[in-house]
Image (cartoon, rainbow, N blue to C red; front, side):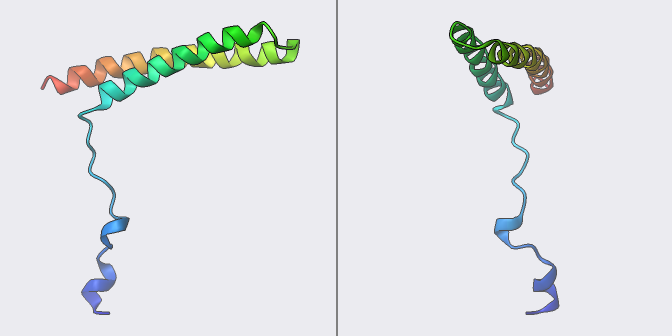
Length: 83
């Protein structure tokens, strides 16, 4: 192997280029999925033990925080794509 070949990464080890064109769509799909998870958890609460209810409520609190963060990121991405 030549000196040049030793220092060149092979094609499969190179990082993919940063393609942000679909970030808004991807983030919006994540928001939708998270909302669906919250709705499904509300149905599960009906059959849950007290400990499971506490866990579900904690997860939903985190999910709601994630939704807010994703919505802010959607706004930022949309703003950046206008330029």
